[in-house]
Image (cartoon, rainbow, N blue to C red; front, top):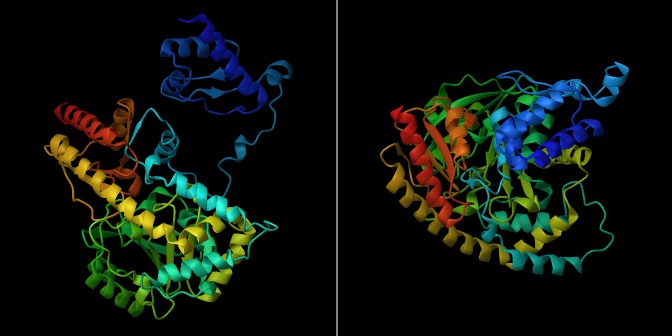
Length: 473
């Protein structure tokens, strides 16, 4: 054991406790996480933890997390100080599942092959163009104060033109600029939905990996999907309660399955929702990422009753860090959501809104999309080749026509937590189907958008070995 490293670990943990960053009741990182953090073997970590346990600062049991039980002041005074720890579970907003939290944390680990990330690879980010755009918009800065409640006027006008090219007629007054589609869902859930109401959603669906609806006291009910999207037969059988039911759908390159709703089904879905007076949220953040041919028009493009809210974003197609998205809906609804947004953050970043306006009005965004499509088509080809080479004996899949993801169906179910852990041990990060409410253990969502070309192939090779070993046990 390296004595210097052992002392360093003890000092680090004591310092965290002393500063109040790890308060009484806080869970320490796992031994594996600490070993990775300090680049030592587990025996060094165990020795350090044993010393801290002997000093009465921490306590751990086999199979149970190690927690802080004292700090230096409580050891001296025998008093238990008041901390925020007891309030962690008292807030109204539910926490993400443990597995989702672990995935979110691991997505920043450069040592892992990232087959989970739903964003463009760093080499696909238009860095030089973004620098030029930011330089140009810096000349437009005046007082650099708060924007209008609905967002920068010029950006809303640019989004209006952008949407019109895609068949959606939306006046600037009916557009709210948000910090991505997730913020839009949060505003809708707390501002427009009654507690106890029901959101019907595709199952599986990305929203199951979030707690945004459930935290607002709204329940999710899943409806099955196929390669053309939401099952209309299942939708017809649902006993909707007018005023208490909403449909959330992601019809274009659905996350996680990448399914694309056909034109005929879109027409029928609109008719069913109008007949049942069922309001709809259309999440269309992947629309611009078509690869083979443009998708059918958005559901919102044929909305004549104002019953649909439409979500769009630059997070997938341009930059996740720009944090610019939009909601389209009736003016009165947008006014309500804008008021809530002002109460939340007083508006999205002005600089990001100026930059987004420049991307749209200069033509750079459409040029960028052409480049991105070519890159994603090549990546998809590499990825499918790797799947056919390594994974074909163990799984099936459908080649997506757009978006980032391939939905893998295993021939034999494997425990989701076990598969995730084994993959992570092998230096690979993936998303088990369980986080999208697919509990069978037979599905995995993989992304070909982020990892490097060589990592895409190596990642599938490693995954195939893990699955083969699990099946043969």
